[in-house]
Length: 331
Length: 118
Image (cartoon, rainbow over all chains, first blue to last red; front, side, top):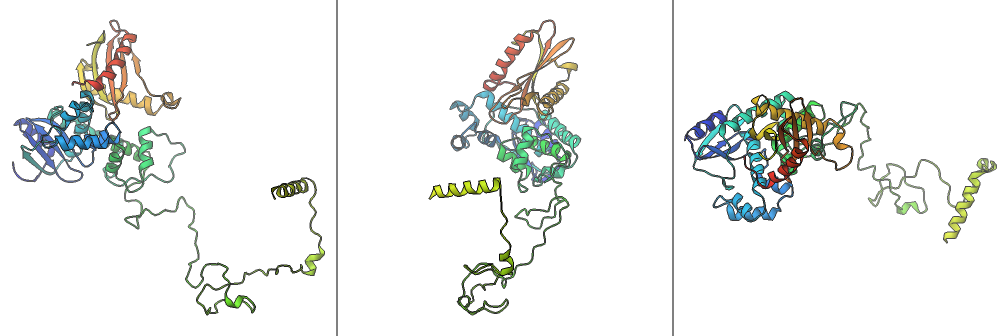
């Protein structure tokens, strides 16, 4: 067929299915995807926004990563990865079929829901998984449209589907009820992971992830993408919360130096160097504290010495004595 | 069909309300609507009520809706990977037996994972 052109992906798929073709529909754009046909029936679909069978099975812990990799290495050239997993007893027929079925509809939504996209049909191209289950093209198209409608009904803002997810620092309501799936998403949303990243990370279907995120967005629990003024592309800076005023900290310059007590040569006998006086040995300047301090061993000034120290009676005294005895016992 | 009195059955994705597979009849002959309804009911039970979260690690086992004419049974299918599926069976009130149906459905939901054919 013709090389890449802009068209409705669903229509081109229906046309290819009508001719009972075998091959792959490649849909460009974001996120885009691929739908694999075998004699006019959908056998697999994939999209960067939807975790594939391998990711679903390994992220959930159903298959060890190396089991999957071994099946992939051995089965991919002959397009019989699915067959191998069944034959080797890693998965049951039912599990694999349900998993593939879920992955097909999930990825097909992302590939087929855009009204127009750059599309291309590559005849003959098959998928390495091999045929596990066959789905009618009409059913896949219908479901993709229904899912798009479903999202519209929940919260009609598609920008939540692709932008990095940031939970709001403060919920707009007093009481928040979350499902387990929503909790999982919020806990893993760090302001940088996109819905697709979260789906891959958690091993959840891409559409189910978007569905939950739209529900959270409708409740005002996630930030509207683009609303935060991001100063940095890489690091999410902490933002001032609520109406509290930022603390204005004095600007620290190199001259101030850290307030560390460093004995300089002049501190031994002579008067301490005055503030601003350049130090001869480039080290940090010792600044005398504002309050005058007694030298060790010196007596109190007379006016203070006259006042008898306040006498503590009752429990305080008893307590102090007890502490003293306890301290002595420790020696 | 192994369940006595069953009029129809389907496997429904309860996050999207999509009927993954269907068999027999559906209320109003509309499997899609039945699936969407089943998804709403499961979602209500899972998210908006305290019934399934009264005890930690408690899970929804099944939901039974009784009508004058029949029973509607919903049972989540447990898979290790993320599938979010629920088995829906529509039973005739006179010919159906709720106890037998529940037991058969439990077996069916377990077997579904081992031998699924759409």
